[in-house]
Image 1 (tube, rainbow, N blue to C red):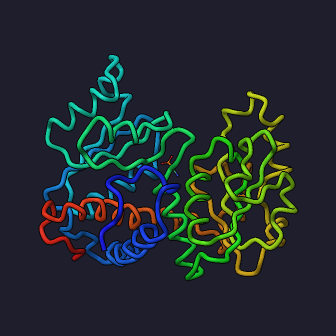
Image 2 (cartoon, rainbow, N blue to C red):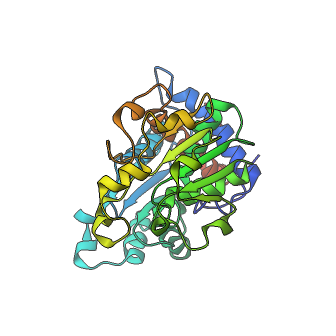
Length: 316
Ligand code: CP
């Protein structure tokens, strides 16, 4: 079955069928990356450009590894060491890179809509690696994949997302993807860090964390963006930790067999205590491992739509 889209820009517009196809394909690639030889020739001859206009550790390395594991040729671009510093626009940058005969562009950018903008200005397949506070679809997919691996289902699970929902592209991608697959979503944070009319996204909303934790299977803890401490969203980090920090007392309220997740980077001791982050209920590093498999699946499925671009169109 071919995927129903040309690019991966968000999870809001993804159908249940496409989400399931990506997750099922990622399962096959997870087996590939657990082998001694973690490489397949699936994207031989395809050139992928990683355009990063914002810092990243996990997403950038994960995409680069996914591309290499699929035998694609890869080029990585960082805006801080490029002609962007001389004033070159995003459109000119991507058109110049594409003139060197590239096939796919992975973009992380501070502006919501940057990935969509690229689809209007170049011919490459585009994957959104995080656009401002809009979406981070591959993070959402790897979170959903990790949950599905653990529970063998998504439907009926109650998933709590805690923290700065307002500025979080990870929260948005998780909400859209998990809801599409039948999970119940709860969000919790200070009212200043909840988007206006967030309940219209079809989520339950709490400002009291102890209430929000009751009956929950999975907690996804967002990074508190420390740079916002002086912007009036919350008084002090200490107060944030007291009201919204996940610790070993609080997790006792969760359903048996609960799961702790965090997309990273973590502020240990602020939104999550070290003992919870490193407990056997935490899948934080498993999320990172699964990220490579999920990104391999997305790269493969988008290129497979143009089957003649691939040698054989199959995972080997
Ligand atoms: N989760 C995530 O996007 O991490 P990076 O910012 O390190 O890519």
